[in-house]
Length: 317
Image 1 (tube, one colour):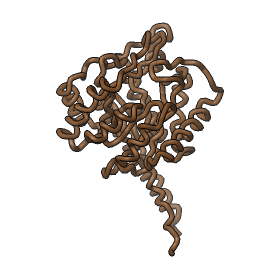
Image 2: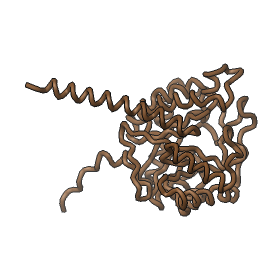
Image 3: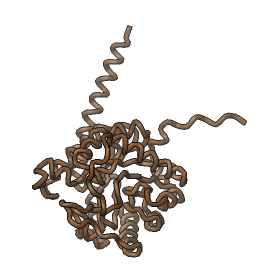
Image 4: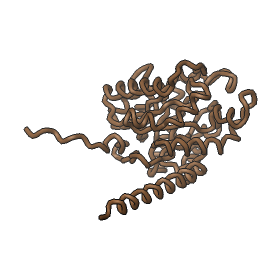
């Protein structure tokens, strides 16, 4: 029997989204538009609860440059001084009722976009995939169960595993490590292993900006996005959009800029993440981010072309 061919080095970077490829090789970055069908998300809660309102918003984001739409039916707003008591838990039936009809509508009316479902409940992931979703986004990183991983594996869907400290809605911002990059990388590697053991082929990692970290830790995680890409050899998703760290940097810890004033800061951090190797940026402000990323990619391509020309000329006899 002849030996098996060596694995394709591009296999980890070109994701199979249920038969549709998503090219995440270095230098390529995609915009994921946030669609919260919740009453209590920190930035846009209550705006897109009905199916028609959600579908219209999804269509707008697709026109503005979103390659993916991330549909979430349970807020992960953390408790603390910024957001108060935090998000209330949502029962399974309620989350299904919020998410599945929206996924069905987007799959029917917007066939060009990839649909991600933002959930840590295996049953929600499974029903959303049955309704037409392509990716599962688990903000717990499989720390409390592998139901989402089994659902993703059964449907041949990629799985996002995110790092966080504590449960969604209960995450306290405590400095717990002198090496936040190392801590997060180790935890993500463990989540990746759980996903692979459950049968998931394509894993995306997310360092969890704003999920149980201090503001300084959050900023460092974005600045060192390439560390996660290089150490884990997986596509990296970064979600910084309108989060509290941006409000503090633009204002003060005591008087952070409100969510509506965080657009330019969000775009700037997303552009930095892309320049540092992020494959997917998860955002509220799609058009602004897509335009910024187009310039980042154009500049990087110009640099690469110049380097290739220099190499060609330097190699001439």
